[in-house]
Amino acid sequence: MGLNVSSEHGGSELDALSYAIAMEEISRGCASVGVIMSAHNSLYLWPIDTFGSEELKEKYVAPYAQCLGDDGESLMVGCFGLSEPGNGSDAGAASTTATLSQDGTEWIINGTKAWITNAHESSAAVIFATTDKALKHKGISAFVVPFDSPGFSLGAKEDKLGIRASSTSNLIFDDVRIPRDHMIGEPGQGFKIAMQTLDGGRIGVAGQALGIASAAIDCAAKYALERQSFGKPIAQLQSIQNKISAMSVARDSARLLTWRAATIKDSKKKYTREAAMAKLAASEAATMCAHQAIQVLGGMGYVSDMPAERHYRDARITEIYEGTSEIQHLVIAGDILKEYKQS
Image 1 (cartoon, rainbow, N blue to C red):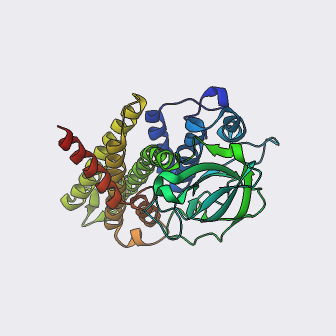
Image 2: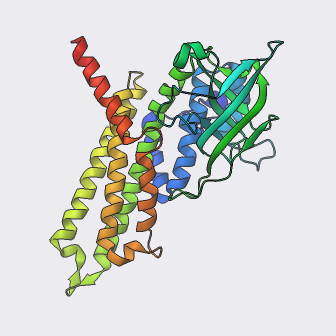
Image 3: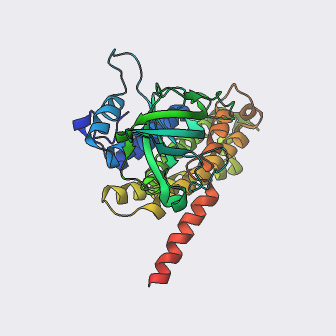
């Protein structure tokens, strides 16, 4: 579970390209397992490993990279709290607050985080809270919050359309006190940390979406070869072949965009635009492939006897979380226009 974490802290020390490939293959089998892995690696471990102090890494990265507690049985999983009930895509409008205690030794956190993946499996979270309202998004800071902190509670599990094996719920902070040294990075650096974290997270979601697309193609192609109609396998019908072709082209195109974004990240260059392109293309490819798989299967695609309907339900969320498709278009266009203005 600590694919990108250094071996010093118990991780596998793999690069972003390896991570993208692993995400695709795991999600090809189960998209829920894929998103659990993505949120844990991209959204929880990465910001602490990149911006956290050595003390935070020892306590909140090393055991979580190995994913096992001291007893060798309990799972050590983390989550990421950015979205709130009232802000959605407006990440800079955080209403959750963190204020220093009178003696200056603790942060006191109040607020609610919404739509949190891994909420009920986690024992710690990376969260973002306003420490200086006057500075707006520049007054947001990042923190690690252990779930055994007094005043912390979880909301009910959301009853979701897809990725149902992964829990999603609210994180509720009611005068939650954490040590002052549990801030990640510097005061006011939270928004920057969140945006950089989401860049990497989008490569993970792209990998997940590719896995769903691949699973949908697997399902459609195998069924088309076996299903007999008009005296022959439907795979011999041109209309079915067109669907299989379009699905594969969309999946492979998105895969190349994902691998490009991962390669650029590995080269330590800015990859915001490329990650957004990968996530946009891969999520839309997943939805299209899942939709077409149901068309190939016909009535059998609409019932739970076959996995096509699950792929369809799982695919839809990839166009929503870690930045909707509409947000990805804004990120891509904004970066392109900025480049033209500077030229």
